[in-house]
Amino acid sequence: MSDPKFEECLTRLEQIVGALESGDLSLEDSLKAFEEGIALARHCAKYLDEAERRVELLLKDEAGLLKTQPFTVEPDDER
Image (cartoon, rainbow, N blue to C red):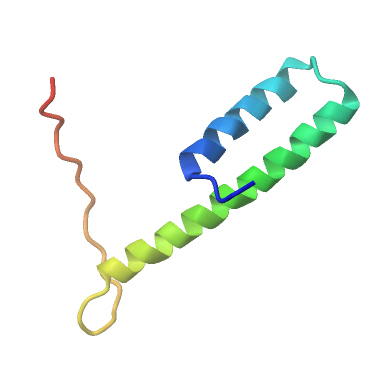
């Protein structure tokens, strides 16, 4: 697996969960899917941790102190 994007991992993880929940997989296939799912979940967690660190760096002030500020979402003008 070359470094897949977060969204790709999440989509595949959702597919795996659906397949496991369906109960249609053999035990061996279930184990393989579970192993792949764990690897994807770890990749997603790592990606989110890195994103959080990047955001924290962007929010530090001149003194290097982390400051909090409200997160606002601009309304979508495409409606």
